[in-house]
Length: 187
Ligand SMILES: [Cu+2]
Image (cartoon, rainbow, N blue to C red; front, side, top):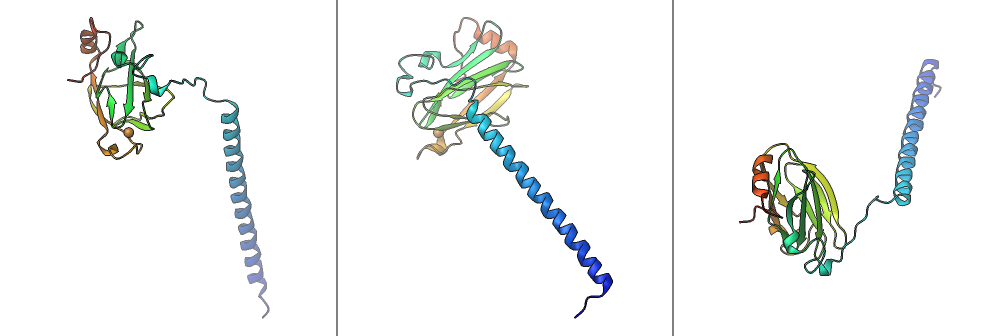
């Protein structure tokens, strides 16, 4: 069967468009591959600026994460540092107290296995890896309460691993901080 002239023209145009689309999709795949390769190589060449390690077996005996040093500390510059640990199957402190409208630095680690550290209603989401200190900063806009769950399966008691973050006004936090080295809302 012989194709009519106008039909052949239509097929040519369709083939050309199809080749263009194919070329475009190859270009997109190539660009994504190049991006992934660059990001991977760059990350391997430039690791995290600060990688802090800690011995998970001696957390309770010495260093930054001893029990008396956990909780929220009001720093001389007015910011707040929160130190916490995760262990099977709880967080210490169970209730973290922070002021609103204040830069808060979290420093946390795990005493045993990998745990998650997720503060509901915020974009704060970290992993607590034994041997390493997870550090991140946050700012809570308004007083309120957030639940904080472990989102990394850590064993049979994982589902019960919850804590709370209580955000109070800057003023009441300062009042509570008077004469106290560390604060928490654990009753
Ligand atoms: Cu856990």
